[in-house]
Image 1 (cartoon, rainbow, N blue to C red):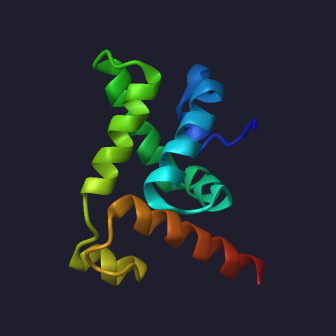
Image 2 (tube, rainbow, N blue to C red):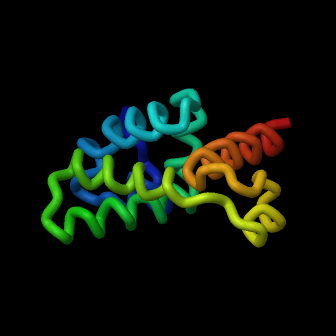
Image 3 (cartoon, rainbow, N blue to C red):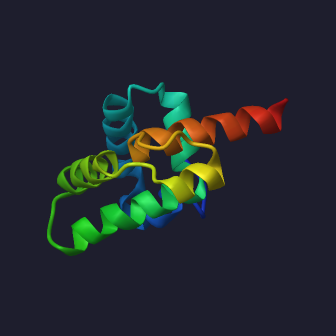
Length: 114
């Protein structure tokens, strides 16, 4: 699926976006147990841009694209939502960071559509 979003994951990944998109979709969906549509919403958000920055750091360090995505996914799943982030975004404290923001982005999109 081709995404045209200058501010999210796709735009941040530049020339590697087309190859990175399906890898990130699958890796994040598998890690968070969230549907692909929710992952798409996350990747198109500013949080997806930050995830892409993390992937880019892996690429800069010499990782292959799939390895950089896997490492970023594992890192984001290893972090947990803290008290401040929980208050700011309404995400339950202690939830894996990646799971929390994928769900958060889905909820925000649904509320805007209502």
